[in-house]
Image (spheres, rainbow, N blue to C red):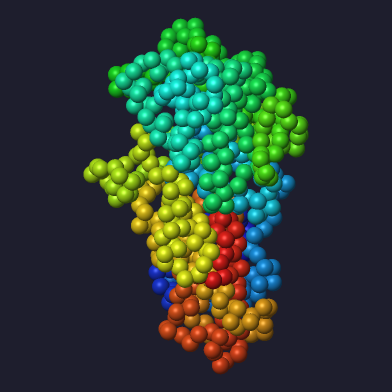
Length: 626
């Protein structure tokens, strides 16, 4: 279509040509059309039909794979694709190249931050949406030639960690202080359940206790101060707690093929003085000021719009980075982290291997590595509720000249995951609302591991093939969490998530297995000679989608709307199913016409190549047998 637009511009010696292409309401009117004659008619003072006739005369016979051009009132140009030639070109190109993925990076390094679950309890299904989105974005860039660095930011000095540490120390006997032996504290953990599950219940119980007894608020304040200073025995215990929970989080993510390159601990941001250097930089540039009066008196703030009135109350739009008591907000530490990602700080982390994995973690006693960081573009996967602080960080980076435009720091926002009424009842919540918000403080939610285990169990009960349940569970969960548009909240429902038909990950896997089974039975290994004599409507649809397959990936690199990748993958598989089942056709491998057999096998082969490329991005492992 771009070639047609270029030809029109050349004919009228004008680059200012509006040539949008649309699909006509029926095939008899063409495969695609344009209203370009209307925009040209206005500029040239002519009738659109006159322009359309002139364009038809100039374009006919000069555009590859176009068999006919017609005109319809009041001035549309309609193009008919020469599908036999077009189809063969598309099929052969895909098979020859063996991929539709391209190297479009221009040498850029992309930093992708995702997951960032507080290390105070088990992950829930809402966290999985973040992790899966971030992992797909990483795969999108990596499979198209970019250098990527995937980071998991661990808020191990935040108030949620102080909550669980305070609960462990003071909620049940023995109480810390009466006996300072941390072995006794660890013995409170019921070893019959995973530690992150134990903390899930303890965290909810602690918040209930804080509502009834203010002493726990004071104890938490004391613990929080100890953690932020980072030198006390309580701070060391807090790091052990956080580490054990992060081990559980990484294990949960690994079940869904979600990987990280680097773990960044907030405590190391403080220990390595990244915030101190950032603070001095902000003061020198006038980006941060200390308020002397008003609601923010004593606080260091970023001026972001003064006071806003809402419901007869006044709210400060300025963003606090340092509170009046000297403690740092999350945004302050996050800002230092983002500046470090861009390689703009002199101070740096030490690193070491994380356990027996390929993951690198920051540490207080490791080795330096100057190749880490220094990103050209930053993508942060964080839900929409953090939009305001993310916008503040972006504006600061722009003001400091650390990024050239707003797209160099991209907050990839997404909606939250709630529970349907049925899902709530399944986990024992008795209510009648259509949607229930998950709440760690109330202990409401579906743990990520429980969802994965249940999905595997249900698939195992239905599948006849051994050892594929975990792979199909991965397909089902990943696709379910990303098929919705990013700004859309998901009302999670077990039945919808686990179904094997329709718009689901299991259906995609089934289509791939069916296609590879056809090729295997036909012993099709390489492209064979064929001509396309006739072409069915189902074949046209499949070929057209294959011809557009690279466009959706390239567009996603620009707009990061991965739901479009999911929708296209489903449309592609639906088109393949229609092709496979067309008119109750004779199975391909049983066709007597060798030319027709070779053509259709080649079409199947090109479909598997494209679908496999989309699976690489979606993180779905292709299965040859289900």
